[in-house]
Length: 503
Ligand SMILES: [Zn+2]
Image 1 (cartoon, rainbow, N blue to C red):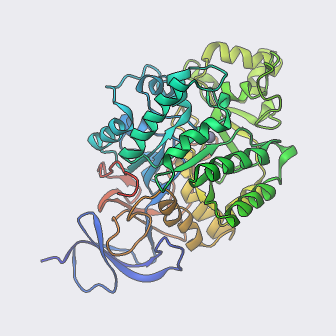
Image 2 (image 1 turned 135 degrees about the vertical axis):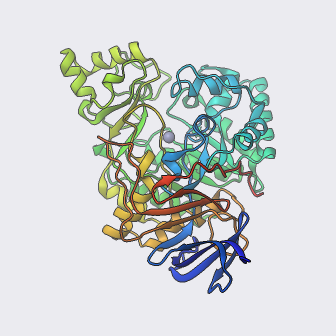
């Protein structure tokens, strides 16, 4: 009789805590790792991992798949790259209250209808009912909470509105949400005064979650924006996560050295500040937000809006349409190309696109410096998050390639970081920060979220031209002890769960 359900034999095991790889077998029974080392007992299933790296499953700390995990529960774009846990609800964009959540996500899923849920407790239960292929943890999106009370009002929340938001946050906290997120370049997050965020964040003090922020400005105002994020965490007494750390726009490149210094200084004062990053020089967001933040804008800004673009200089040739639900033929074209075809200045072309698509168009924007990407990746406070958006035919390739790109291109090929560090940044480091208990590490007693890959061949194949391509070199992916991908194919298994903070 087999001693274990599964034994992964003879691979090089990386524990996720940052230690160098060691040759060892890994035994699994049920949803947990039973033993790591020289294992005599046989497994009902034996997987020969000779020459392979065996690591904890990757944790995507920066996801927007709140609805995707319900509608496309196999989550192939993520599990095929080794992601076993998706942390959704980033950038202030959440699914509570339900109606505003649906409004927000119907930009990615036109005509979206789902049975409703009641707050974050209801959402987490729904995830468990659906059982996606990967685990799901959730951040509470402040923008959607505010939308559900103050709408698009450009003023501080009233006492009643604040009380409602606090009630949602308290319920979500108690149900196991991992923190609160903001998106301060987006409506209505951008109208939120700092102290209002602090008030919500205080509900998480005492180890009940973190503050993750897509900051007000990632260009000329980057440093003030980092100071604001740190201020929120420091004042409220909760950890801080800077989302997709970068300096946007050529005139601001290099500034990440200063923002990293601010993070180091805060850490020296005892504030738990870290960041996440996707390993590309292009970002991706809604085209509406790009225009609203000052690029290709025809009308003057209102006096109560920030006058400096939060994105830095954006050129029409650097804006690539990823998703245009009403005019799919625009997908894969740049704003410059469309403007030229229509014989219009970029500002007029932008207006035409917004007239047709409203807030539904998403773009890829080339705006970062490769040197900055490496500087941020190398820094010990940076973990990995894809920021992938499932929308349209030409999504940003990070949706399919983020994690293998770090392991293949940046760790193996270019030596920016070593393999053990790269694995740590996508496993043990995020599990600790987001309080995902018994995840992100490969040791007896941990949940059997495991990736087996060939360190000599792993690589991303998704490109800006052909983004929907799975990576190479991933041999097997296990979620809670169940194989969800084997030899480059999804098994169809849906072994994921809702993860509740600390449980
Ligand atoms: Zn964001």
